[in-house]
Image (cartoon, rainbow, N blue to C red; front, side):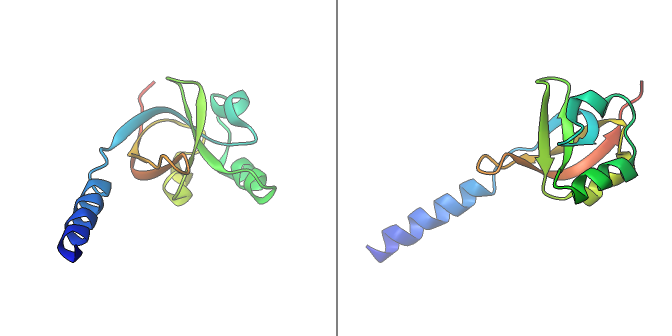
Length: 107
């Protein structure tokens, strides 16, 4: 019985680490401004002001017109207001992206 539980746990833990990286193309913004200012070139200072008021840093996806929160907003800050491609893993429980890489997208 102990051996079966150990094997099951090993399989579950191995499967949890196999989540494939995905990409989102869109704009770095916050949950307050969202789509309305995503393309307008919102500044890092504006986003930080909104975050202090309770908003969250987001990637506004142009594919599905949805804002995604991120687990590590410091990676987005240098790209605030820019059109970007974000590579990472979406946590199905929190709907937050664990950002691996952010790249500016040429216009």
